[in-house]
Image (cartoon, rainbow, N blue to C red):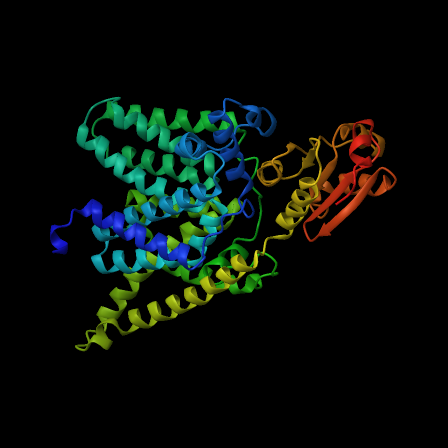
Length: 472
């Protein structure tokens, strides 16, 4: 009977089953906290365009091109955080489905099934869904890249629809993260080595080059990313996703996944580089390490799950044992250990979500949102995380002003604002922190957390009415 069900219906039922379990087990959070700043900027632009307002692009700058993928959210579900999380879960599921097809074609059905299953229950996957991070989007775009390239080659039509779709997808990938540069690089290398003809090769390479340079110029690179983080510390997320308020494990724990990753990459280097999608994952892993974050770590997770399982099965089969334990004993043991670790980590995430735990930065933003609920008049906030702050408070928010020469210059830059929110431990805010400490009569510190401080601006003329209002 199952054989008669169309494959599209099977995929839909599988997504509903997986998504339903995630909702039932409270693995997804539906408040405006924990969302990445770049994702928040894309969402706000999308929602405001749907309401015929484009102010965020003037204030926050051009966001990454996820705004194109978020178009249905702006058209049908403006302002809905639930729709955003469900949509991101759909992106993660679609990425795992395309990776399944890739693994089945290049490795085996067994690797494809187990690898995709572990990817869908990985704590890092749910963490990225809740943050609307770039990880699921990068995996989806990379997998789409190979599929689109196959379609374009089969069509053999110069400058047709598949060609321009490929350029758009390449631009979206590049806009997300430095790892996205692997998309045009991998395709350009493929067309350099295996062209249909010289004219096709020139068109593809020129189009990808122009699209890449254009998006980098328009966005000035990746302004909202943090650079120079220790990749080993980030790779601890493959083993243990720390809670919002926990300090997390030592970066030394990252030595385990780092060693496994290096081992599998070196052992399968030729196979990875000779495949379009494998090359994207490999090059994306290298290029993205300069801005290592959980989204980048999902590329490492995909390599470890798929290529690692493939290598482990080959080793296990090499033992040439006749029993099931001899044929798959190492594989079953590894899957059991990984699945158990994922179950424990998912349970920890569920507990944090049920408790309403948020990061120190989001805790300060949530406190500010509570402060503003009882105020009748509009309030202006200046924040280091303007999109996240605006998303939570729904009040006018601007990014931090340029550095001032002295404390009075800072006070002039803050004219008309009521609250200031920034990270006093950020090296780029060292001058701002010192100047705020010099203005104790004009600026009142309301809340301090590790990585964020909330300051109330007291005595500018615009703030007299607000200061006279009853404080919550």
